[in-house]
Length: 306
Length: 311
Image 1 (cartoon, chains in turn purple, blue):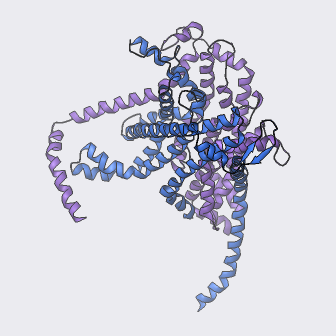
Image 2: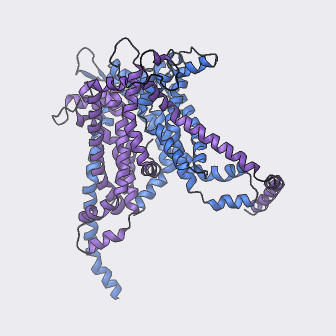
Image 3: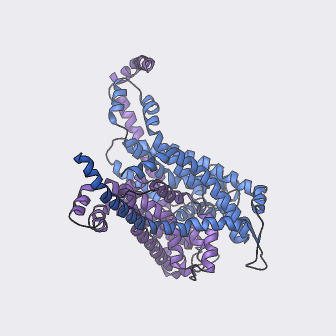
């Protein structure tokens, strides 16, 4: 400890001569670092946006122009978009995704907020064990549950065949979005001061009333964060979506787009694939940009899954 | 005396409220536990059971207990080890690149300049693109005939303008890594940015006063203090990369050296309908991921415990 404190000033002083020289030479280093900074900013923006811009660009090209490297379409046309929206497989898949991702998010928020409240507020045994168990399911590889679920769903669970149904996708999606929701909501509930709730309890409210009338409204931002992330993860899911569905009318967009062949046969459907990719992504990008702060808070506070 | 009486009097009441609190907790937690038992725990156990059986292709429904034969066949096959190798190479390279690029992006977003909130929104765009969409996008860009990559190379008269990117070993892996880095480096950057934001400014000020250079400040302040955030980010990304499925499925269908563990198990299960051997592969994938997440519990388990005890 003492050797360190003695040694450190010596090394800093040794460097001091050099840095003083830089310091006295005015604003030069700061200008250089400014340039470096803006170079980094431009590179990051290009890296993040250009590929997606290229997709939009491709989606607006048709025919021979698709094989050109034009950085913007010379003959922009929405033909690719009209063609995918005429394709009933695609529009059905959009609806399926909305139902399945929305349904699983609502269930996860409902039962997840119950569990998160208990974990954040109540005293009970095995709390750490229960939380660890719930969180450990986020590490399950989907492939490990895909085959058994396929067998269980096709042969029927309690006499109900869940294969190729909405519920058959909603339930397994909960394996990864429920732990995420519980983790985010638990940390949000912990940040809500206990006083309000305790005041309500003293006034004769039941625990459940305190939860419903006081905690839930205060935790609304947390619910939005958890709901958005859950919805995005469910919208993204792919492996279970292709394993547990068999027909186009129950296939979510992630699965539909992988099997997308476009309207014309014997032609690389580059334009339509691009249009479909843009169509299913733009709503998410809009959501993410509107709720930027919430999402970053959820990703970094929870950071359960990438 | 009176205090002792008070505690004696209070005890039964407190116990009753403790019991009711426990009962309420049980009611509140059980729906989640039931769902997880139904769609995670039970299927995993069933997968293990399936992996210990051999299924007849000719008579569906007929199964025979074969013990660990499927596992023995798996770990003695070259296809399994090849998929393990591919998965680990993919994980090592993509996670390393994501860490380096993510850290650079995080430092950039942390720097004070006007419009950095715009940069933070921009960085979220790749994260918001569907994984399957990402794969489709890069498949289009690296298309041998119509792809943008080759068009640029040709326009600049650079060699390799006719590369069949997804049709060759090595190149196909490179495209897959590139696509993954594009999509997830920004996510890494956001995790690291959160870590950067909790480092107090006065530490840097003190070092500046002492004359530490930018590089010295980065190595002796930023990196050590960022270690927990780096660790968390690395582990999340590693667990995800080990399970990678969507990218190779869409990009190459696993051809040209891109058959990852999950994809190999999927092919055995669905295309070849080898339920027993395929399940053993899925279980092996599960064991590998669990072994890595055990490391995760060891390293960041303290955080979970803190969350559980912070009541």
